[in-house]
Length: 382
Ligand code: ADP
Ligand code: MN
Ligand code: MN
Ligand code: MN
Ligand code: MN
Image 1 (cartoon, helix red, strand yellow):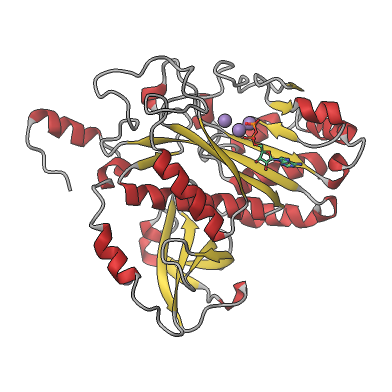
Image 2 (tube, rainbow, N blue to C red):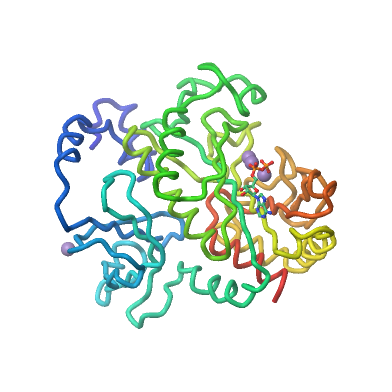
């Protein structure tokens, strides 16, 4: 893709990660529109199967034709793929399986076309190493009588095609953080076109998008998904991430969920995925005592949570959870009302109303929401 033309270009090319290498100027969208605008096939539709690969962090997809649009999730056939190309199998025994778990209208193709979230199974039809859904689903079934609701706040950073944060000066840094959070104006925010497009895409797909805002670091944004019941939190957040990557692809920019990209190691906020949680008891009048009881259950398992809150056993999150930049320290559990420097925050409105939910501020922006929600449910109730 990149043809080095000078010494400096060569060194830039060598420093680029895969993500950056693939980014390119979008092809002619008017040409695509012409074909997407053709009369749809009278019966057939396209189903795009989406799954989490062996990194536990990146998404893959492939598309197949269905003779008629499925009307229930079990009408999607189990499909296979080459797991040796996704870090999920060895070459000589590489078939890995996709089982549909939830499906959504496809905002890119429109019509009857569907996006299908899948879980991955190995050659013996057992969950693969990065399939955290299977275990989380078992936990959610056990606590279903508590009616668990989750809401997750996904932070991310937009990168230009060269891997540099979008809109940042190429030979230095933007003015210090302060004016960018929920900012308005061309000197405050960058990439709103993408954010609005993603919002519409989520609504079209039927996701429970709660809202969005510009974040503290320039080119950093957040969207929230929720309230979602049980295992659907993971399904919906992964699908919302897929939509974000695909929208960004069309704009020719890159989304990173890295909690602390190297270039932001200075005095810039990292990226998290705050996870809000409640049960029927917590939401009922006087539920605050149930909120507090659940929060206290999180203390003894803090270390285990930290290992599950990013795809690299807690290492990614160490870069972010420094005790500065609105974070708690990684090695000590703490909680408080309205305190954004704690592991867990009880929002002031919850304390005042005497019922509601708590916010776990520890998960990294690149966390697996299945692992996070499963861990919270398990620690609080099992
Ligand atoms: P913050 O003030 O931490 O930035 P946001 O407004 O970004 O909060 O996000 C609030 C999140 O809390 C949303 O994802 C929403 O779905 C979630 N939420 C609200 N009420 C509940 C509840 N009762 N149980 C679980 N999650 C909730
Ligand atoms: Mn092939
Ligand atoms: Mn938020
Ligand atoms: Mn935020
Ligand atoms: Mn928050």
